[in-house]
Length: 613
Image 1 (tube, rainbow, N blue to C red):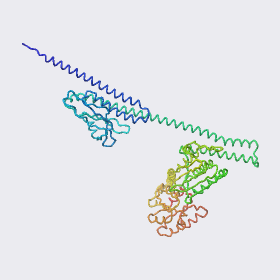
Image 2 (image 1 turned 30 degrees about the vertical axis):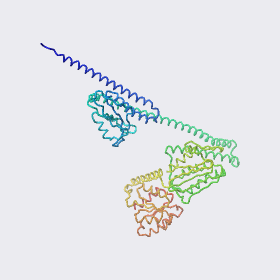
Image 3 (image 1 turned 180 degrees about the horizontal axis):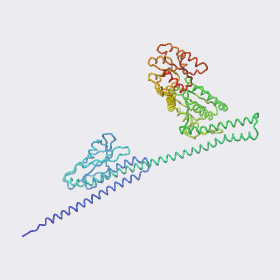
Image 4 (image 1 turned 120 degrees about the horizontal axis):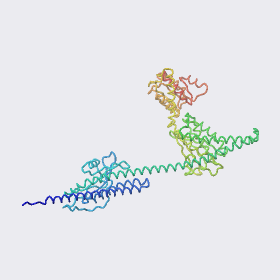
């Protein structure tokens, strides 16, 4: 009797049930994945939407880090493997450093969970602690292992390397199947999380960029509005200032034309004086405007010369004397004995001092106005002081802005454009110096122009540019005459000794000749010259005739008598420029002569002549 078996039919039912369970599990995993990712994205979007100011950028970045950690931990611990407790953190490492630390850790409350399929309790929680030190090589190893337990995230705003770390305790054998089946969906979840994190950081940086641009635009608009206000104020002031002298010029000219000019009439002479004064004032206004425009466009022409400071200061005070006398003010000049020369533009230095002195007279009702000149270390200080109304701290901060003007409420009129101090400050900077102010209300003011005795900044650039132009001119001349090799100076003939006690003159010559290819050794007196000569063999000695410890005429005679130095070429450079001085120097033993102020091109030609003989 044949019997049939129902085993295949039973196996089919089991297989169908298994496939159904597997499909059901896949649906659950998919729902978990989408739900967890939606929750994470929603939380990140909420953080980004709440960013309204630049100050919130850093705090939002921190919140993004912590949110990712918390949401990943919550998702994993609520998933299929809720039987296992995950600990999630973020590790950060400075670029080019080998160690980092755990900067963020999940802050969710934890519960002790039990696997109902397991016969024993799960292992202890993994040892992931906040602020714990972690090696870079360990992070990289965790990133590369299978399955990975660390994932590299995008760098933060400080370019710090960032990793997401997921730690779990060792699980018993009953949970292994669950772990393996969940690895794939967990991997998808982590990689999508990394994408969301990087996208959130990129959006945060975009928000930061546009907020910065908006802030810059707001600042620019504020500055533009302030500048427009200042310019409008400047135009109003300038219009008034220009119209005032023009009205005088036109009005008194009309009177002279109507009445017929009669030189002997006192009234007509007064008319002419008013016209002349108004014309000068108008010219000063226009010059201030043009000077500031040229300075701002870097087109101001500056002529560098060796200036006799005491003489220039006396000339400047002579120009202020009449205005000071009209107000009954005492005019003072104090110059230290060690103040001599300065390398500067004489016209611009006069302009700076006159701006300050006229302001001092303008804002002083009684008392004194003075100019004090003194050296301090390697600087020359020109201090213009007065016993006037002084300047409050609030006004001092506005004083050096273009088009700003301090108003004297006690004055009949407040002339000027408010540009004089701005121009003075800019001219001082062009000379390598700066302008200082000390003042108290009703206690007077002190404006100090501080200029370097040694050439600096644009002064050196100008001297070197002059030397380069002269050098190119010499080369062109040499090429025209068919002897370009004459520009070559052997190293043995490049040594120059300069005997000069004036620092400004010495630096001017040293820089200029140095640019032409010479090595210049500077000494201040005869004693220093005798000390240096045995150490070098100069082709030329440039010597001032008036030295602190010796007369140059006597010194050159001593050199001519000395067997070792009698063949050295010696050139006199001196302020002795009267008739017969050149002959006197040549008779004493000098090979050549050049008078001060030194013409650099002529000096370069003289040195070249004797260094090639």
